[in-house]
Amino acid sequence: MRIPRAAAAPKTRRILPTAWRAAAALCASVMALSACDRGPGPTRAERIAGAYGDYARRHPAVPTVTLTGLDAARAAGPVILVDVREPREQAVSVIPGSVTLGEFDRRDRATSATVIAYCTVGWRSGDVVTRLRREGVNAVNLEGSILAWVNDGRPVVAPDGTTTTRVHVYGPEWNWVPPGYEAVW
Image: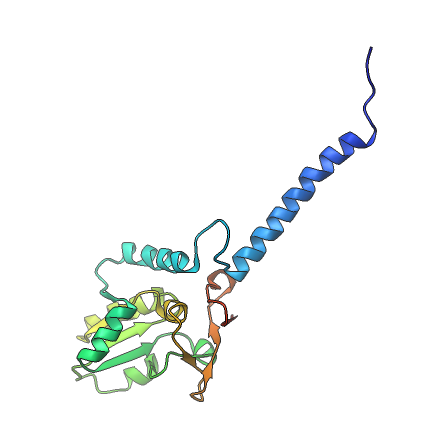
């Protein structure tokens, strides 16, 4: 003898998995956009290292410096920190004491200073370092750039020199700023 099923059972089975998939997709999107370090997936530091690592593997001849190396270079002698990002990015915030690429290009290049270039994560600044080195400038790329800087708890400043927590991250896929900072794109 055949036992009839409850009418709602097949409908519930079809709706529930769809609802769970939709909820999981929404949750994954929110986690990715918020760059949360909790739960499965890479941490902000791992995302930054991975993005910069992709660049470094493709361009092994470009010399790099870590934040620790930057601190050591500053202690050893003069350093010029060059922000190669676009003006709209620099209008949000910069690393204190940095100059724009345009400002650097107008300077006398006869300097013994180490030039350290940065952008969002290190791709564009690496390309600039390649050009500067061809021109005879002692330039290196800041590994992880401004994203590594803020994830290390270091301050950024607005164009007027006041400390800010806003950081231009190029786009939502690069929103890897730590808690307490506001990503702008």
